[in-house]
Length: 583
Image 1 (spheres, rainbow, N blue to C red):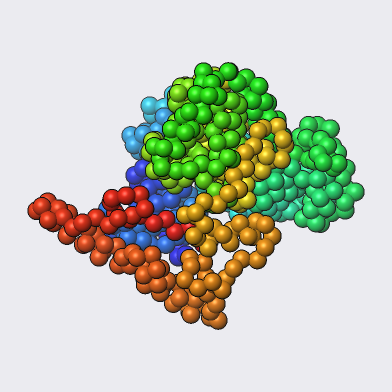
Image 2 (image 1 turned 45 degrees about the vertical axis):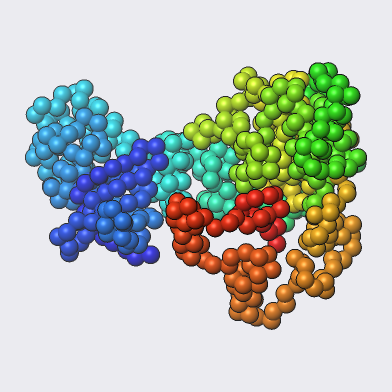
């Protein structure tokens, strides 16, 4: 970071919601203007400012200072004071009124506004009502400015300071001196560590009740955000909180009990231990359970008899040219019969084939929606099923502005069945939102590999549902011939069974590379991508530019009537597409 000093000539743009500002600056000793951009909510024309930031070149606007923080001093010259007052920041003062005030009071005009605002009525053209409005606006501006300085002294960024001021207004300093830990609960983006630093600077004791309570909640939040836990056992929570707070366990346990008495934390027995939740996680689990039972118990009898379903299954085998295993048939029949069904299995066990069969059956009962938690998973689902699939967020009509879903219990989805793929990635909050948007009687099919890593968000929904025994589960265990040719698939199942993978088999898609240095590892990775894997898979290892060139050549030949014959892949005529599994 570099320092830049100069006079603020003009505020070119400001977003009043977040304080983002574009200002025109005349740097000291330089006659040319330069733009300064960043979160500068209280910067005003006429002020002298010192900016911490870096010089950058914008593609459209040229050279500018990207500001990370700044300090200002009041304008001291008559022209500076006039620009400051006439900038539009003070209600009731435009350029003309600013000129009158400065002509009357000179460079001392700001001192008069601060200490004796009633003297404004001495200025020709300013009556008592207008003087009161100007004085009030000037005082508000001073309050915001002083608050910003106070917060920045404790390490808060201008953007975060703006959030804090919007929440607490002129009472900000009073609120923080009374309990700085309110920042954690009431301001998004402020963590316990930041509030704790402020508290220590303000002289709070390490055994402060405010600190103990906030630290306990912080441990639960970290357990959710870092490890995906929706609760912690009480002894574990007390031990972790005591370590982080550097406080005695007895003090922590007393604060913990007080939080539970106030319902600021929820405790209930889980597996012979007391589980402690933050209220929103407990609420999400309870609502998810309620909505699941509503779907499970509210299923309507299918209009498709078992004989008709079996006939459809036989027809699917003929049309798709596949032979289904008993588990796949069981999954298809359960999807027609049950309100909720879980289909789980490792790689190569036919989950995609099962989904396609179930789509065929459920479409005879009504409208079917396909979805997955990520865009990539939804795209794969759509390609495999041959019909549209979308992310769960899009299905539920997520709005970035409102940070909520358009589909919920008051506005449910118009679907008779919903199929969700890659369920292992769904966290507790997304699951609750999805279930809330389903009408009673809607059939729900959840498909996923329970042995994959759980969701990034809190909760292990798929595994917990399976372990609960409350929902019918079909496990696919048979590895199909085509998948059985992949050593990756076979080793994945070995690992799940607690067996060591086979790593010495030559000529397969699974092998172990040992390299002694980072450089050698990088060279090996490049060679794999450029030559070894393309040669093994029969693919073109050229880079994107060469691939585009080849594509243009093929297109030109096709337009001239001389198209190259397409490669024959496993799916019939057309370019061969090979999915290389992650890892």
